[in-house]
Image (cartoon, rainbow over all chains, first blue to last red; front, top):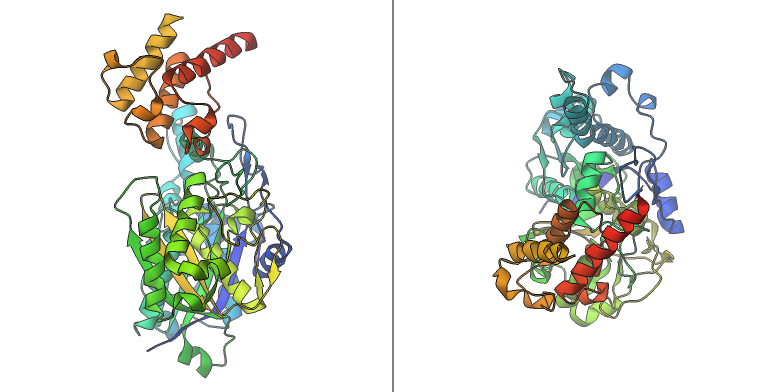
Length: 401
Length: 90
């Protein structure tokens, strides 16, 4: 059986523009949610988010390239550069033919779509920018990552709303494990801070007006985030042969569909995805020490996810550490699973468990150890990373130090 | 004021797929066949119909009673308050 290790990681999100900043923020338990500055908030009711503050695309790309890249693609390429550099791989040669790029995105280039509709409907523009389609297509980020690194193998975008990145990583993991290719770049990216998207989220009435407080009794909903996380997955033998840094291992993947409701979560669907990931890596539930929860901070997700964790882990649930790093980096939707996979790998590698920030009041319906507010120095061998999407599409990764 | 009651009953009857004549301000919301998205839809329709803005977070609606919503009359009162508030504001 081929083992699949992680030899590179990159991440840009509200909790940091690179892995070093991100690790420091998670260890400090610092919440990066604040007033939105990257968009016009004039017509918004909810004006907070977890944005990538101070991101200047011209510091990363030539002007000509910025013109054809939506913000979500820019994030993906920036994170992929970090990951590929750390891996030490040169993908421009023959290896690029045997490398895959599979990323998750929920909606694609919303910034570009929103700007074009504004021009068209509000400003009555006669024509739109020629690059509109190339910027907004949901697979654009994958294309830019292939071009950036010269990757010429299988490449596509996986989309399943808030589970997109986790589905993408799971697909890449399975392809490397199956021996289809020795290397895959995978993860996810999202950027949705536009008036159109924010008004649509407001209309669901599940955005928190204050901050994100997962599992805390006074939680008021989710806070949107943005960013990208990228992993370099590699056949362990291939990585060992070249003396690559081994940052962690993906050991299992589970998926399920609720076949239930378009927005309400299901305990059964979440349980089946977690069980399937644990069975896939041939471990017992008792081997796991940490769960990076989906933990959106909505009333229903957090109660349902807690019940599902009890259902899967039984009495071991009480000994598990469960935290939602969304409390710090917000909910980056289709990119969330990638940012959280990076957070989980950092936790395993550095021997700490990131906290659930903004936790101020315990909820009798959420009765697990959510590692409130302060990171814990603790070595963990095995962890899960949960993603449960609207529409009942669930994906769970099992990871190992 | 009766057009407020009538408007609220119309909108709730439509969303709950209930016979309008069986509804009254005393009807319990929990007795109607509405899920959380239906309740959000009701508030959207009320905002559009009365040109008001209703501060309502669905995270309070997992337990509608927790948000002070037990009967249709509670919804009517919210609309009344918002209409009064909007007039004061103008």
